[in-house]
Image (cartoon, rainbow, N blue to C red):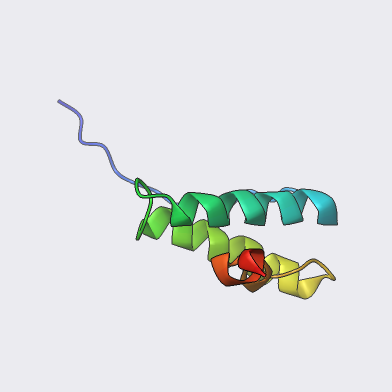
Length: 71
């Protein structure tokens, strides 16, 4: 039987600021759900999109935290 090796690849995608905002909001909701709480995969995606958002005028993930939604 052939052994599988895990590789990492990078894909470059272009998103509009509005799309990034929606993605960050959805990831934040996923992170706060009981099923995904503490998931390293979700936290990694949030960090990647937030880093990209910080390079543009798009809000960062902190703008979508539970505390800011409660205001």
